[in-house]
Length: 237
Image 1: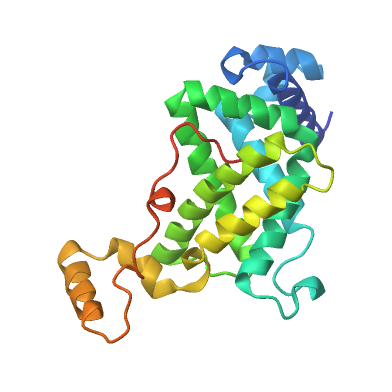
Image 2: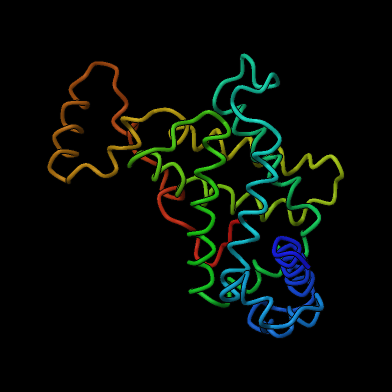
């Protein structure tokens, strides 16, 4: 096998095994035996089981990104929410062949906080690429906050997707639309999002000045509590 073919074969075998058993019960030797390569060949491509997980995320990213970016004709005239909706639906389409592997990872993460944290970090990196594909700024502090929030948002949508038996994914699309509506600040309101990281005194001063503005809703700048922190044990492929 060529190096790239070996990588692909190992990843396919890993995902097949993940659909059959929990992540903690998949040894590197199991993956090598399933795809018919030696441990030495596999070691040239992967350093650990966590590396296989990272490869899964990267493979999904590439699949989505290969279908076009913010300059694609289908995005013409659409706002950031609509573009991101399309990109995240593409991600779910890319995950469809591996639905049982995602389901297994979700169960495993609920029992293993370290795995859940690792998956969340991988998802944050992936969601930066999803933001870029949708033409939404993903740089700097604001981009980091958007990626973190989007990772949590996507984890919630995954839960619906895993239970959605409709080929048209009506429930999933409705859930994604609702989550993006609730998380609209992640999409383009840079000042509001970045204010999360402003020191406490500055936030307090800003809040006080906003309260004096006529017609200002004092809660307008508050991020929804369920978007400010990830749900425990929720993976986000």
